[in-house]
Amino acid sequence: MPPVQSETVSKTPLFSRLFGLSPISPIKEHMETCERCVLGLVPFFEAVSGSDWADAEKRYRAVSDLEGVADELKKKVRLNLPRSLFLPMSRNHLLEIVQVQDRIANGAKDIAGLMLGRKMRFPEEVKPALTEFVKASLDAVSLARKVIDQLNDLVTTGFSGREIELVEKMLEELDDAEHESDVLQVKLRRALFDHEADLNPVSVIFLYRVIDQIGDIADDAQTVGNRMMYLIAS
Image (spheres, rainbow, N blue to C red):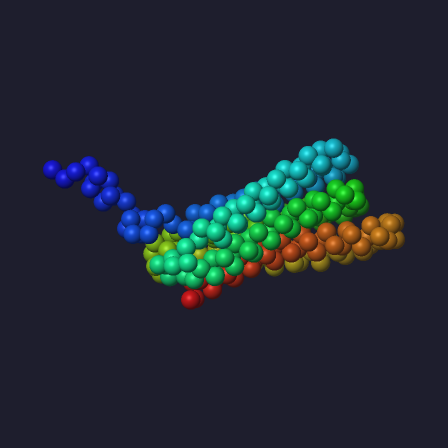
């Protein structure tokens, strides 16, 4: 009868037995944190819409705290990612993915910080367009997170087979989501333009900046997908 330890080892995935824990898990955790950070903009915008600045500050702190957690996770990945991965991907490509993911969390914090600091509110008339735009950008981030969730399976299958087809389909959906965000960004800009005359000129400049920053979040989500395509193609 073989020792119990042998049975335990035999049930452990070959990759883990040879090279230890997958370096992918911390990258997935980082992306999940970045997504949570961005989703924190939803209650933040609700507080701002109601001019509840005390609640808006509370929501900003939640976003800021998650951005801080994302920063710490990014540092952990950089320090602990082995230089010899024994994987069908380069260390640099993985670090690039983490860098872009981190921009998503940074963007969420910057948006909330700017709006809170200046107590900025969008005109009531453009709020429907704003809500659509924010949702589209956040949907792109969630799709990027789902793509990153597939990394372990891609490694397990050696970047081949049905898993590749699944990821490629998800990347197409991510591209569509980013395009939808672009379309809604134009719609929101037009809506804001129609009410510029009623607003403080300086406030208008910063409102357009916030619109750009929300769009950047969707762009960064798509870039995460593009980096995944590099991994698949390499």
